[in-house]
Structures are given as C-alpha cells and as structure tokens.
Image 1: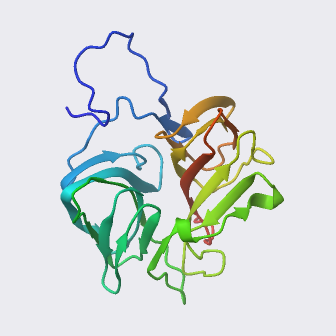
Image 2: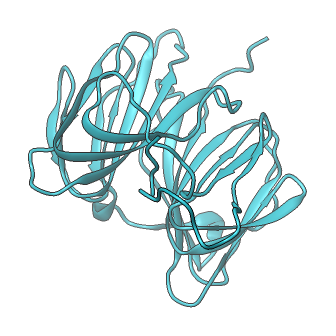
Length: 262
C-alpha cells in the first residue's frame, strides 16, 4: 500500500483522523491516510481518487502528481467531459482541437467526445486536479474547449461582499452548452458566506490555501489546505475563513443548466 503523504509504519501518536464519511450526504477527506491508486492510462504519476460515485457523487475527481515524464493520453472521451487544473508545476495539454502549456493556475476543459491528454516535460513534479463527468446533452447546444489561467482573471466580489471573491472558470452563465462549471472562491480572514446554502447542486471542493470552518449538514467542521470535501445535493453548507495568515481559497465543481431528471 502506498500513501499520499508517504507515511508508512508505526507512529508515536494514537491513530486518529479528521476524515468524515457520510455517503450521499457529505464526505471530508484529509490527506493523511489517503492512498495512491493505480489507474490505467496514468504513466509515471501518483494518483489519489477523491470524489466518486461510490461516495454518492455524479462525477469523479482526482489529485495527480505527474512526475517528470508523467502523462495520460486518455482522459474523458466518448460521453465524458473532463477538466484539468494545475496546482503546482507545469504540463503540456491537448485535445483534438487545442494544445497548450499550462503553469500554476492554468486549466483546460475538454468537452465530451474529445480526449484530454497531458504530459510533464519538465524536470520537476506537477500537481494536478483532474475532474471527469458524464455530459448531459441539451438539444441544440454543445460545450467547447476552454483554456485559461486564473492568475490572468480578475476577482469578482461574491454577492456584493467586500471580503469574499469568486472566479468563474467556464462560461456556463451565458452558454447552455455547459452543464457544469468550475469556480474558485476566496475568503479573506473573517469572511463568510452570507447565508447557509441548501440547493440541488453537488460540489467537489479541493482547498488550495488557508483554513476554514465549514458548516455541512448540521455540523461545523474544520478544513484546511490540502483537504477535500464532497457535498451532495441539498446538504446545508456555508463557511468562515479562520487563521492568522492565508486567505481561505478553494476550487470547486458545480452542475448546472439542466432540467431535473425524472
């Protein structure tokens, strides 16, 4: 067994974890105890599965360390849309119509039917967040490839608040072809949501910096950089940024733009 934090053998401390698993409600995964998975297609990569249908999610997302020479040429494909975000390092990405080099904050969305590939041609590891979801087709509309970098985007005040900001990575707000979006939220220290949300959309969240207290269902739980949180449909949710130094930021997925399936 290989672990994300590379810790093996006995420890001096009592066995404990902050992870909380409540399938089809919410799940918190802290890095400690997460395993590296062998996934077909990933070469010279360390892959940890985060959210999945086994958890209750309609998607799957991963934390990937692409070592020098690391690659995958088969993400997404028929019926599956995919998204890749660079947390650390650099990778080259491409699909049928686009090729780009992504550095920290860079991302690529590849629509269903097009395979996304990446390769790390550098000498240092690259840390990636990878997302896959089955596309919900809407007659007359199609998604398209999107490439960008969040560091070239302006922060937008979140719901009129002066200490909370958002970046929308995909154009789902204006294009019915997209059935999901990726966002980055940033809370300055002491900032919070304006209310406890309860909605049909589910989220997969990877925390990029800082610390927070997150209200999920009827509990307040501490989260921090490196944690992962899955929130299922209708799970009450909100957070506060806490700590002394870093802003609290996270990237998260959200399904949207589709009728309720009956």
